[in-house]
Image (cartoon, rainbow, N blue to C red; front, side):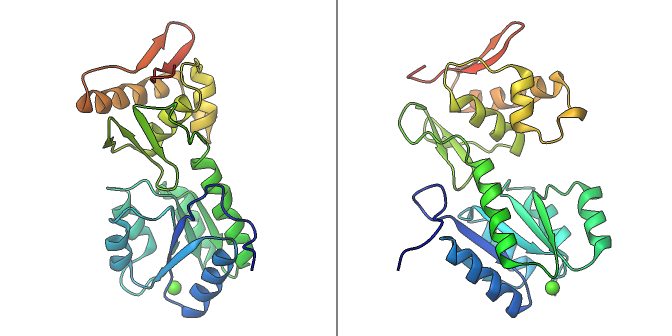
Length: 236
Ligand code: CA
C-alpha cells in the first residue's frame, strides 16, 4: 500500500495525542497515520508531561478536559521545558476564549466536534512552518537542525531555545551568510507582527547569542548596521 501525503521530511514525525475519550483519540490517530505520521495516545495530563520530557514528539494534540488536570495546566507545565507545538482540542467556546486570552503558547486549537482530516491538515501546516529551514546538507555546520524536534544543535550541543530564538536562528540558517532585516525576521518568526518592534528582534538575538556563547566562545551571529543580521556557518 502506498502511504499518501507523507510528511515533508523523510523520517515520519511522531505526534502525541492526549485525549481521554478513546473514540476521539482513535479517529485522530487513524487520520494522522493515514497522513504518514506516527502516533502515540495518552489519556492523562501527567503521563503526557512525562512523555513530552523525552522530546521525541514533533507536535502534541492536547484535549483541554482531561481527567487528572486541565490541558491548560499541562501546556503551562510543558512550556517550562519544551517548545513543542501544541494544538488544543476544546469542547466549549469559553475554552477558546481562554486559549486566546491566556497566551499559553498554544499554536492552534480545534473545537469539538471536529473533522479528523481538518486536525491532520492543521498538524501538517504547523509542522511545515516549524520545519521551514529545509537544509539537509552540511552547509549549516557547526549548526545542526532537527526539524522534527524543532531544535538546533551548535557544536554538537543541543541548544535550549525559546520558540522565538529557535525561529530566529532557523530563519538565519535557512540562508547562511545572507542578511535578513529585522522586518524580514519579524515576519518569519512572529505571527502577530504588528505588536512587535525591532527591539523585540534585538532582545531575542541577545539572549540567543548568550546561549551560543555558553557553548563556544565565538559569535556566529553578525550584526549589520542599519541592515539586519546574518549567521556565519562554515559554508557562509
Ligand atoms: Ca476530555
